[in-house]
Image (tube, rainbow, N blue to C red; front, side, top):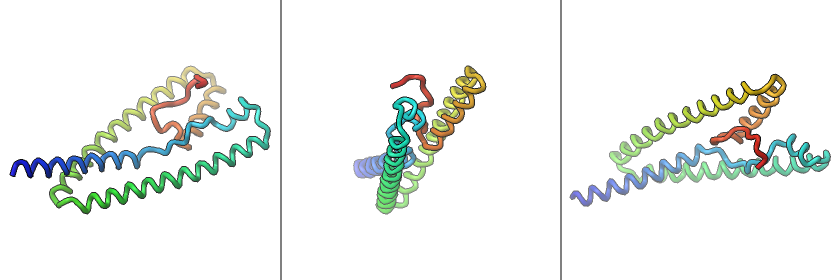
Length: 161
């Protein structure tokens, strides 16, 4: 009896871990490849208007395809979650939901902590700049945040890598 209970618990935990990883992956922003802002490209590469338009078209197309790919991934994750839920007994489902709730609570705490670190670094950076630099900084940060480029753990860098 103990062995059977152990195996059932092991299966539930394995399924729950897969569910947690699946949920985590659906909340991650798509990786846009980290391409630099177009203004930077124009300045650094001395692009003609024809080259700039071609690059804009290329990246706009790539973004649309990446968005579709990310949506397909979310749908796949949703289907896996639905199938997983249908395999669980009522008691397993309750245990799984409790695990999910705990995960989401801790995940939110980490997200809040990351946001505070980024906001602090942003403010300290702004404090080092003059007014015209602050305006440029704010425009750069705003543009990248809209596109999800800094959704991870980084912000602007002075390094050229």
